[in-house]
Length: 499
View 1: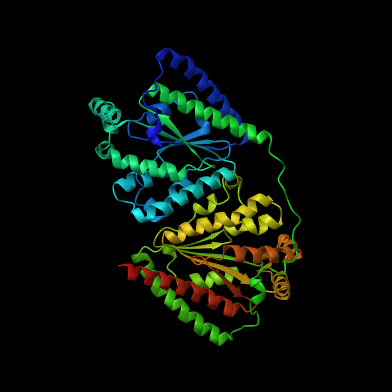
View 2: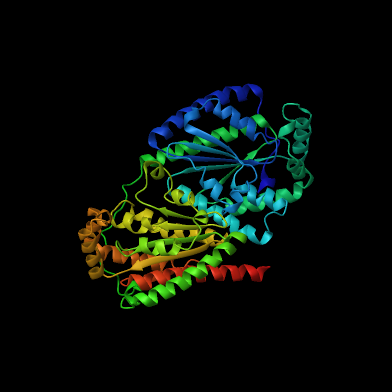
């Protein structure tokens, strides 16, 4: 791929000067239009060391409104960032709608430099590239413009520029030891780059290859492609068809699985048995907390379920025994304006527990295929593709060593009504009962279809659902704590076998 580039291409100074000003004015105008149309953009600048990326960024931002973009220079991950999945730190930097994020180096450093220095095992490279492709496809599907540039240099030009920069008192500090290793291992790094370009140049986010030996030529080609990409994206918005919203289903097709219908809601525990079994499981969990910390195991338990199904009570029993310094409960309600200006998964990525800690989510990303689907907050296209996006997200978590436990707390309509009435009559619990709860109850058949389809399409070997029969709060609470304990023990045993 790269060997097809003609690195002898160049541009004389006069032609360059005549084109650069026009391109910069167009880029500034497009930035304003993107802001008005709430079109977000991600610009990825990759390539060899001293390929001119920094000078290009400096030139661009000199013409742009600084309120509408952020430049993200990507350095090796910090100690804190290494406690999360590798894509976590990039999700934190995503531009809001209408803004532009310029990534000076990016997630691709992981499959280039980390691969060269054997910080990324070869066996993990294909999966890492698939995760990158999934991430970029999710961004594009969500309306983000993604433009990726690889600025290519010959080995002779790379060596010349490194030597020149090293002799410049103002630039010498920018030349890293790793940059010299690129030149020393040029053929190896070139092969890694070719592999990366082939496997991550997708229909959603193709690579744009730039002949970089002539800095003037490279700069004009990058800016021209950037202007064309933003213009095309804005033009597509003009001809978008109205979103499709199909009528809600109030029953499952006879061929569809009905996992909720298979749950025994008659199971129960006496109060004495409940206290005994709960204390046993809580004691087991308390002992595991130290091992979680010592072995840096991240744990995430997410709770979904019917209104009044007992999520809060189950969470309280799960945390009663835990040291509050090493767990955090995150309740999720309707997204804020800031959260709605990003991909719907953004707010969940931001609150993931780090290695060694326990995170508990009261509601989660499954709102996209439940309340947002049923209430019409998400289009058909959005909630349908969310199944795949959620499975990809959860696979990244489990591959990064997370213990992921997903609960659906299930009750029947009669039990829900009984609990609603009890809340209504109890002055200390009346705040828990809202008009929305009653409205959701009226749509029970539609939610039941959505829940069954959600479970069937997101129940995977590494991230299975646990459906908890919760008509009896006692048995539900014990099952929740026991399930978390067993999931943690399995992960600890898996890690001990790998040592």
